[in-house]
Image (cartoon, rainbow, N blue to C red; front, side, top):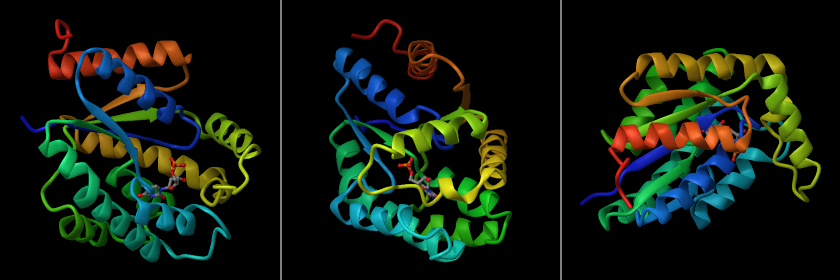
Amino acid sequence: MRGKFITFEGGEGTGKSTQLKLLSDYLSAKSIRNIATKEPGGTDIGLDLRRILVTGDKDKLDPVAEALLYFADRRVHLTGKVWPAMETGEWVLSDRFADSTTAYQYFGYDKRVSRKVLDDLYALAVGDFVPDLTIIFDLDPEIGLKRSFAKADNMSVKETRFESRGLEFHQRMRHGFLEIAKENPERCVVLDANKTIEDLHHDVVSVIEERFNLQNAG
Ligand code: TMP
């Protein structure tokens, strides 16, 4: 049976990467084979694209160029890693996917790229494939950005190109994720990320168990 594709979405510093790892461990304990991956940077080529996208001067790329590069990363990720894994029955947990492009490159930049351009790029790079479930981690960007900058202090290469866009960009992006959730109520679940790691993990597990009927599995 084809594996599931679950995406973790949200702003900076919402704790989604930590939650993804915890969910991966939880699924493994239930004998559900799974891989944890991310965008941008889930493949070797993706890591090169990631360096271009998340480091350096915030104005070095315009929103259209950014969207093209994110979709290039996505195409390589899907064809080289996500789809082959799903074919073998593995569940794929992805730290970000196409909703991030809509939230950042469309809403974040105050709609300087049209939604139609992003929809066309999606059709080209992804086709009619969509995640089985998207969990959106919602957090006040003032809290998230503080966490994210604190983490970057310990990085040798600072991945803070988007963090340095300022609060308004991040507030528009947060609002964007909530709009996406409203537009896709079947696919998306919004979780309040202003919780302890343990409490948030509990919420993630509740969503997964209910959605995929796992209560009695494992
Ligand atoms: P990360 O820090 O969650 O790994 O994500 C890398 C950065 O790239 C983050 O600031 C969000 C941004 N991003 C976009 O702007 N558009 C996208 O499509 C994706 C996947 C990420």
